[in-house]
Image 1 (cartoon, rainbow, N blue to C red):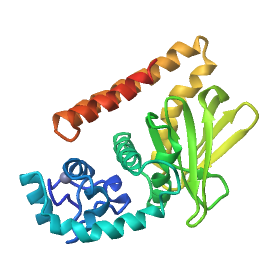
Image 2 (cartoon, protein in one colour):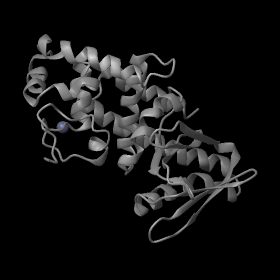
Image 3 (spheres, rainbow, N blue to C red):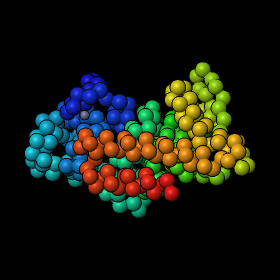
Image 4 (cartoon, helix red, strand yellow):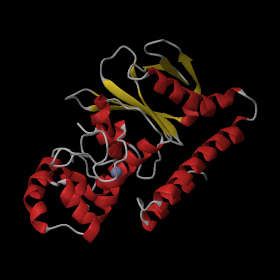
Length: 277
Ligand SMILES: [Zn+2]
């Protein structure tokens, strides 16, 4: 299988290929940037991409539209299969939009998530608030379980999401004010991240990627262990705002390269800035 984007020839990342949704009918793959670019021209591409070939995509990019006969038939089936996932009251358009934003954010934070977290990622639009931005993510599961799982950091909380193959999703949220400190147990195979909350210590094991787990811990350590130092709050805020400014910079680049429209950029920017207050 080719490991480069069929449209822009950029090397594909694990986030690009993780969900298997970037696949084209001819076996090629699009990177998330190209997927977002083309799906902003034609929304249905987000769900029907595998019915298009690279030739269709190229003509779509050139003409700004695509021949209707290519999409009519598969579209119907796709909508039906999608209702399986739409267990919530979230409007489909909103779900799609959020899913796309979340994929962006996961890519921007550079998380190395295993393929076992596919189910979790799809649940994220229902789990995160519509304006909740992901600052960090890693593949981690409750210690002593075999369920896949991930840990996410947003400006307001740490969230663990875990989903067994056919089971319901399990979500645990730890609001910032309940986390007194975080700690880490190094291990050459699977380090453990501990969240110390008011009444208990919750442990997560990172057996997908030790280095990614370490990187993630490094990040949360900066935010949550500030409390041990005097005058904690302003510093915590400063770390969070630095992170948000980094995100803003990345957004700016996405706009410059035409991946985000002016409107999308403005919306994302507002969300980020709102979290500073
Ligand atoms: Zn590409």
